[in-house]
Length: 442
Image 1 (cartoon, rainbow, N blue to C red):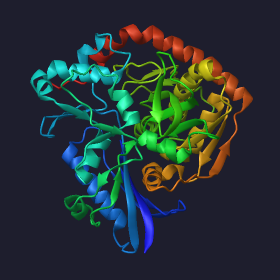
Image 2 (cartoon, helix red, strand yellow; image 1 turned 180 degrees about the vertical axis):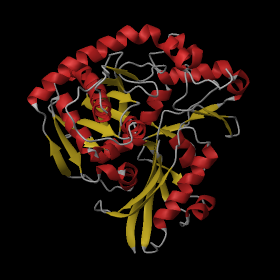
Image 3 (tube, rainbow, N blue to C red; image 1 turned 90 degrees about the horizontal axis):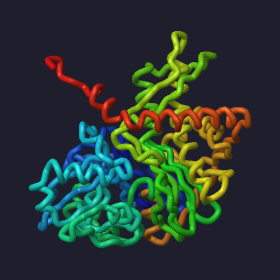
Image 4 (tube, rainbow, N blue to C red; image 1 turned 45 degrees about the vertical axis):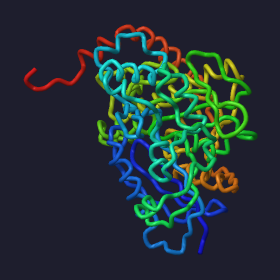
């Protein structure tokens, strides 16, 4: 038998199950694609079960030593006194006309306040709150926990005293053991240790080796996370600091843009990726609202600089540059606190996009080092190994260097990028209202 560590990654584009060896080799993996952000929780749990069974199918000689889950967030789940789900507050929701309120500081607080206003009876019944990872881990172990990084988000909420957080532990602590019922669903023996788990992005930090020697990390998935190690939390309204699985703080920003923005571009532009000499428009990739650094849940995407000769290829290039500009917007503000960062470690499925990596290097004016297996979503599996006392450090497989001229050009674009959005911010509610989809009869 070969001992392995099972990681379950639930991202916005689907669920993945990966089993790695004690040396970091991928033994088996599977993915089931699905739009998970709005999926009912029971269906989401079923998707996870099917993904794990698919990964383990025909692999009888793999013995699972530990399990860990990393899921998207922050997406609060309200529970009643018996632990039954009352409501799930979706990660992305249309802001509607209420977006005019002063809620741009924190989209999580904004979503919770709106739910409280729209569903007061359900809110009054709530006795506990958890996240998607906690819900899935509880389904495996019967124990409800929350890791410290997630708890840092939830502690910022204005919750009444009657709504409690679960037991708070480190993400690599054991939440419990695989129950007999869950074991039958997954096709595994009962009693396997299950880690408390964490956000998928926090697990990806573990996979990137975040900490000493790799103190600045970019996670490029459907969304993007960018930050650096700091000794204390930053006091900057544009940025956030959160605990991670190690000393110090992960300080930077979480965006709603990255792979999801490029997927939209490929859908709209029929994957026209050939290069040409047409002028590249400015694209603000706030297609699902935006978190750092603008904190505007009611924002929508914008395109400026369209001309009669703009080509599909140039417009898609603008989408790529829009993601890179969002990264530069966070990194530039972060540099005011930490000093300029000359080297970033990169992980996440979006790292396979060579064009995006080159644009990111140019926009940041820094070297990018992509870790081995970056696109394989190894974070939860490495977290599972860590929970069993096995610490893995993935090597670097690809490197990118910035081009000086391109970096200077990005500096000019970034100035306009910021100025235009700040000018448009007072109009966001009106833009959302007049562009909201309507029925044919309206």
